[in-house]
Length: 331
Image (cartoon, rainbow, N blue to C red; front, top):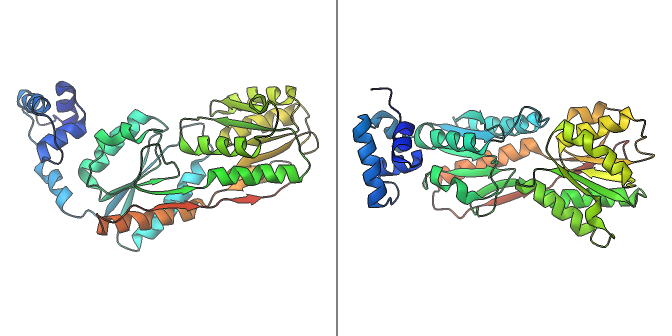
């Protein structure tokens, strides 16, 4: 039964793989009752810990894991690949390699990837999480394993992170629309379970707080093209003369609907969207965007993980980079 893995022990014992690892390596307190279940499951399955893999925890592997969250309909692949490029080019100067993994916006898959990268093959992890509550991840994280969160910072996390000021980016976008003469400005967003989405909506509500019936101008859907396409007629029906689109996938559906139905941008409706993807420049008219410095985020995250590897007890650093409004023809 040499193919028995730690996850098989975890399933039989009814615990997480991280708990099994803690029992084996004595890296965190586990109750006697739980430890007995784990040891009994190991005995039943004739499981023997892989001491070669365990030894990697005490020697440097010069490998960093990067977990990104890109589902199949997402147009943000280029955003996260730019982050990955910044990480990789910075780390290779110090002799490190990067393992890139995709959680596909699936929390369960993300947790599996974290377990693998924590337990065996990396000196640290850079994570763009799908989770909105960091406590959900604690069972699959090793306390002594360096971790940097990038782009998204969930509730309950106080460690190293690199993010964009999504709140300020939204403020800039709405101020620009107002300066261009737009008055009934709506918000189109999705996936409020992640920190970037909630901060963008918070920014919109703050700068528009004096607008009557503001909640009627806020539209939240799924992060898909189809959802954006269905959302567009609602935006038009509410008599809005501009809309800030906080999700790049929604933007594709909204813009397509407007073009298909002959609704003129920017004359009939102004558009600003988050993220400076190539398609936003080549559509007609080109779109005004809030640009995020993705490559620089990767560089910052790489430097943070290196600092953490060499200074375990160092005070956590939260780096917040500023976005830039790029004005084009949609406003």
